[in-house]
Amino acid sequence: MSEYLILMRLNPGKIMDSLGDLRKISNKPVDGVDLCYTMNIFGAWDVGVWINAEDSTQALEFVQKKVKDITGVTEVYTVPTFPHGNKALKVADEEKKAQKIVKPAAVEA
Image 1 (cartoon, rainbow, N blue to C red):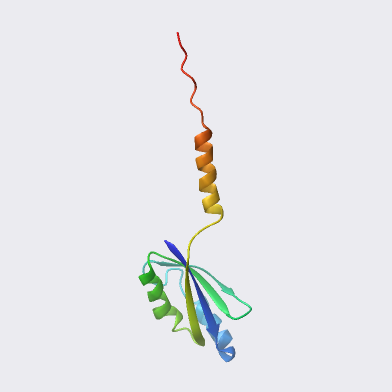
Image 2 (cartoon, rainbow, N blue to C red; image 1 turned 30 degrees about the horizontal axis):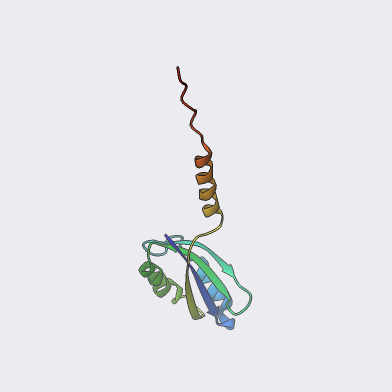
Protein backbone atom coordinates (compact mmCIF):
# COMPACT_ATOMS: atom_id res chain seq x y z
CA MET A 1 0.00 0.00 0.00
CA SER A 2 1.16 3.51 -0.76
CA GLU A 3 1.07 6.28 1.80
CA TYR A 4 -0.46 9.68 1.15
CA LEU A 5 -0.36 12.91 3.12
CA ILE A 6 -3.42 15.07 2.58
CA LEU A 7 -2.99 18.70 3.59
CA MET A 8 -5.99 20.96 4.17
CA ARG A 9 -6.61 24.64 4.65
CA LEU A 10 -9.68 25.47 6.68
CA ASN A 11 -12.01 28.43 6.88
CA PRO A 12 -10.99 30.12 10.17
CA GLY A 13 -14.64 30.56 11.14
CA LYS A 14 -15.37 26.83 10.67
CA ILE A 15 -12.33 25.21 12.30
CA MET A 16 -14.25 23.51 15.12
CA ASP A 17 -16.86 22.18 12.68
CA SER A 18 -14.12 20.96 10.34
CA LEU A 19 -12.23 19.16 13.10
CA GLY A 20 -15.47 17.59 14.33
CA ASP A 21 -16.29 16.27 10.85
CA LEU A 22 -12.74 15.01 10.45
CA ARG A 23 -12.96 13.05 13.71
CA LYS A 24 -16.10 11.30 12.44
CA ILE A 25 -14.35 9.70 9.45
CA SER A 26 -14.00 5.94 9.94
CA ASN A 27 -10.68 4.08 9.87
CA LYS A 28 -11.75 2.50 6.56
CA PRO A 29 -13.50 5.44 4.87
CA VAL A 30 -13.60 3.98 1.33
CA ASP A 31 -12.67 0.65 -0.21
CA GLY A 32 -8.90 0.14 -0.27
CA VAL A 33 -8.08 3.09 2.02
CA ASP A 34 -6.95 2.99 5.65
CA LEU A 35 -6.97 6.21 7.66
CA CYS A 36 -3.76 6.20 9.72
CA TYR A 37 -4.12 9.43 11.67
CA THR A 38 -4.90 13.12 11.53
CA MET A 39 -2.86 16.02 12.86
CA ASN A 40 -3.13 19.73 13.43
CA ILE A 41 -0.49 21.72 11.57
CA PHE A 42 0.70 25.21 12.39
CA GLY A 43 1.76 27.20 9.35
CA ALA A 44 0.52 27.39 5.78
CA TRP A 45 -1.74 24.33 6.23
CA ASP A 46 -4.16 23.68 9.09
CA VAL A 47 -4.70 19.91 9.10
CA GLY A 48 -2.92 16.84 7.76
CA VAL A 49 -4.27 13.35 7.22
CA TRP A 50 -2.11 10.27 6.62
CA ILE A 51 -3.73 7.43 4.69
CA ASN A 52 -2.66 4.14 3.14
CA ALA A 53 -4.26 3.34 -0.20
CA GLU A 54 -3.92 0.39 -2.52
CA ASP A 55 -3.60 2.74 -5.48
CA SER A 56 -3.89 6.41 -6.41
CA THR A 57 -7.44 5.99 -7.70
CA GLN A 58 -8.62 4.98 -4.23
CA ALA A 59 -6.69 7.84 -2.61
CA LEU A 60 -8.35 10.30 -4.99
CA GLU A 61 -11.75 8.74 -4.29
CA PHE A 62 -11.17 9.31 -0.56
CA VAL A 63 -10.27 12.96 -1.18
CA GLN A 64 -13.27 13.53 -3.48
CA LYS A 65 -15.88 11.65 -1.43
CA LYS A 66 -14.77 12.33 2.15
CA VAL A 67 -12.31 15.20 2.48
CA LYS A 68 -13.96 17.70 0.15
CA ASP A 69 -17.30 17.22 1.95
CA ILE A 70 -15.83 18.30 5.29
CA THR A 71 -17.31 21.60 6.46
CA GLY A 72 -14.94 24.55 6.07
CA VAL A 73 -12.29 22.90 3.87
CA THR A 74 -11.10 25.58 1.48
CA GLU A 75 -8.10 23.87 -0.14
CA VAL A 76 -6.73 20.32 -0.37
CA TYR A 77 -3.28 19.19 -1.45
CA THR A 78 -2.52 15.48 -1.72
CA VAL A 79 1.09 14.29 -1.53
CA PRO A 80 1.98 10.72 -2.49
CA THR A 81 4.77 9.48 -0.22
CA PHE A 82 6.70 6.27 0.30
CA PRO A 83 7.63 4.40 3.46
CA HIS A 84 11.10 4.76 4.90
CA GLY A 85 12.90 4.71 8.19
CA ASN A 86 12.61 1.92 10.70
CA LYS A 87 11.00 -0.67 8.45
CA ALA A 88 13.71 -0.33 5.83
CA LEU A 89 16.41 -0.43 8.51
CA LYS A 90 14.95 -3.58 10.07
CA VAL A 91 14.91 -5.33 6.70
CA ALA A 92 18.54 -4.32 6.06
CA ASP A 93 19.57 -5.55 9.53
CA GLU A 94 17.86 -8.89 8.95
CA GLU A 95 19.62 -9.28 5.62
CA LYS A 96 23.00 -8.55 7.24
CA LYS A 97 22.32 -11.11 9.98
CA ALA A 98 21.35 -13.71 7.39
CA GLN A 99 24.63 -13.10 5.54
CA LYS A 100 26.67 -13.55 8.74
CA ILE A 101 25.40 -17.07 9.32
CA VAL A 102 28.32 -19.28 8.47
CA LYS A 103 27.86 -22.92 7.57
CA PRO A 104 30.14 -25.29 9.51
CA ALA A 105 33.02 -26.69 7.47
CA ALA A 106 32.71 -30.28 6.35
CA VAL A 107 34.73 -32.70 8.46
CA GLU A 108 37.03 -34.95 6.50
CA ALA A 109 37.41 -38.53 7.66
